[in-house]
Image (cartoon, rainbow, N blue to C red; front, side):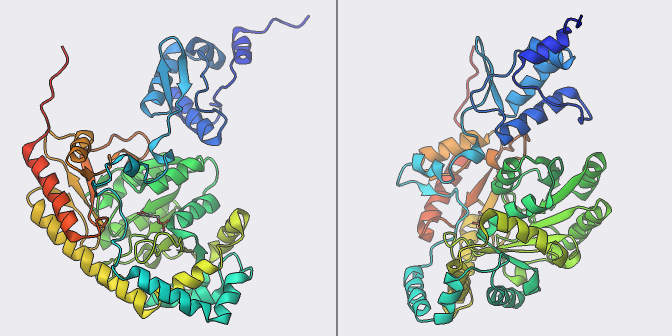
Length: 479
Ligand SMILES: Cc1ncc(COP(=O)(O)O)c(C=O)c1O
């Protein structure tokens, strides 16, 4: 006669979802939360879906109810689930910051508000005229329309890669056309590198405060994203070393010139120390160069310091146009075929017309005029920042589109963003820059470039300075 099922077996049968903890090392509650996060990213658990009751899951996993309570509480803190009295714990259905359509916060902002929230180019006054003349010239070139209309190799046409390599070489970024893969902007290059080079179960790491697109990409791909502690130069090599000793980190994402959002700039000694850790632990380095800066303001890129393991992301989004969606990934020759295989599986190659137009513009005198104008404009806007926010703790780079303001006591970031909105200035909360459940600092990113006119920026900065000076509204504790 078959024996009666045990309590554990019965409980397992009644749970519609259970984490697999067989490979997990470390605290069990943490393993449950990680499995939960993975299941949400993979779509195994859908928004609104109810998690098994705590007692049932405890019996099914053979752990104490306390472990499950701790796991559910941690999952709630990480924004994965929400618990309601009477209806249990459910997968959070509200869109997380990284899932919200970008620019959605602007639609809520008053139309006449001064936007200091987005790291975008200041539109050059002659941009449309220059663009129209480029389109006319393009229409007269037969060889360019062949490149635009015919299928191209996944890596991008050699003529285009060579054109881009020549331009990058002029900017003292010494790359070979054979190491370049053309992409649909920087975000695509980021995603492609992760997708092609990191395997399921491996982790990626970045500074604890980083570009939200990287957080979204690693989350979308289901990778564990590890936050590395930072200091004024960004990622701390000693902390990275310790993390690497605890777990396998396959790829480290870096922005050495000026970290988005904190503005941290890495010295060459810091870069070398990071390379040493990467070599010791066989880790790829993914360097994001989308926030392009001129050679005179730049340190040595990682692909010069460690060419065998460094990938470099280029994009024209912060130089000429974010809408054209043109970028490239520089990779060691040995990795190119893995990356192009992934790109082929995604979309075969990027639309041929994009590199035709983007490169014609980038390499033209008109394009260069726009880029030169922009650097002068950005530098002039930094002078306004220094003028209005003198005395506050700002971290930035002379060519950065933004600065990171540490709010003076007792301001809190959410409150400052709210108060700024009430005086007609749009900012964003720092949460989207935080990796995992890292606490958000009481700091905000101030973007200098979105207002078309410098006067509007000055007005916005003046309003922020006034708020900082006045301090937050008095908070009375509830009694
Ligand atoms: C650091 C960083 N990387 C990548 C991107 C995405 O670039 P693209 O618009 O070329 O996809 C951005 C855009 O703001 C960025 O700030």
